[in-house]
Amino acid sequence: MTKCKLYVLESLRMSTNLKDRITYDPIEHRKKLKLPGGARVAVWTVVTVEVWDPSGPLPRQVLSAPGGQRWQPDVPNWCWSEYGARVAFWRIKRILDEFNIKATLCINGSVCDHYPQIIDAAIESDWEFMGHNIVQKPMHMMDDERQAIFDTAKIIQERTGKKLRGWMGPGLTETDDTPDYLTEAGLDYTTDWVIDDQPCPIETKNGTLYSIPYSVETNDVVMSAIQTQPSSEIYDRIMDQFECFYEEGEEQPRVLSVCSHPYLSGVPHRIKYFRKIYEELTKKQDIVFWTGDQIIDWYKEAVK
Image (cartoon, one colour):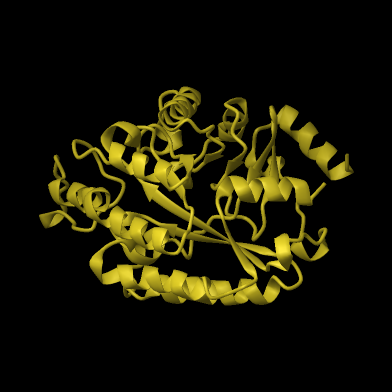
């Protein structure tokens, strides 16, 4: 065990501050990893489906209230999200099936009850499932965060028959205790720590949790809902990121996440750009298309 890791573990005994959970390990100085077949980039497709409650404040708005007064139930903004589950998800699913892409479906535990056909479709295509809290609510706003994590894992595992290995907090939110609760619940990885282009270890009181590179700036929430960029931005920005990763991947492989929310990427004026991403990426010979559990299994073996 290195002195740095010993320091991290000792720090955890005295504090749960997130900076104490991870060591500084610059990519230029670390062990060179190898993807199968000499691939340069592992492409990780994440499709996030959420259940929004119109009776309370919604995660975000496409239409602001007249006069700046918020209203409940928030019909137009709830419908914006609901369209994603009713229509837009199925556009995305058809494209991924066409290109034989197995995605990671990131869901609130409540999706299992609200959108059962989506769960069935993902099971049929052998997609991975990732937890996204029991409801669409930030982790620091939960009355009992630990119980919410355990309940989410239980619901998804019982409904899908698959062990839950990955986690994404709504809005990538955590508390100081979240990593400890995740490993206590038996999870292997999180996407909340957008800190690297490769997976990296996060130390917890119950063993090591791993971070898989997700994305903030190439996330459709950021591009389309927050920055309100043109529809083509989801293609342009992903491909620019891929070109950089592909060049750098000759020396040290990277993980490229394609992050989509159906109510954003799956709408009619953006879906052709979502499709173009996979039209271009699938032409490459030296990349792999993996789910989160495949990435973590590879990483654990590669760093031995």
